[in-house]
Each structure stands twice: as C-alpha cells, then as structure tokens.
Image 1 (cartoon, rainbow, N blue to C red):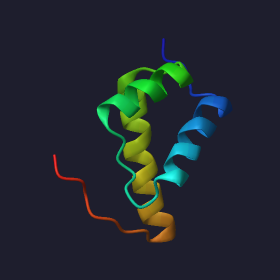
Image 2 (image 1 turned 180 degrees about the horizontal axis):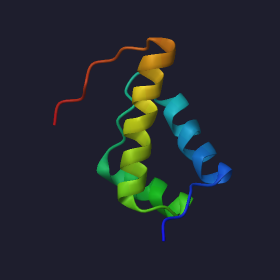
Image 3 (image 1 turned 90 degrees about the vertical axis):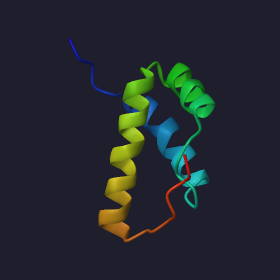
Length: 69
C-alpha cells in the first residue's frame, strides 16, 4: 500500500528546491540523502522533484536549462 508524503517530508524537499532554484536537479547523492531524511524511496523523491519542476514552470513561468546527463 502506498503512503502519501507528509508535510514534514515535503517541507524538506521544498527547502532544497528553494535553495537550488537556479538548478533544481539534485544529484543522485543528494536524492539519496533527501530520501533518507524524508523516509521516502529514491523513486518517490525523483518523482516529487519532476512534479515540482513541472508545477514551477506552469505556475511561475520559471525557466532553467536542463542539466546535461
């Protein structure tokens, strides 16, 4: 059964996003660290960031260059 993210876990992710608004793409290591802190899986953290970037683009018209992989 799937668990919804809590306010505490999303606030940690939102803080990271706000601090890195110019490049909102956490590295694999950063995602692992955030997953441990928030008690979420790596997939959940990755999905949260993808959705957050989509919301930012839609609401605030924030644009950034995608990070080279």
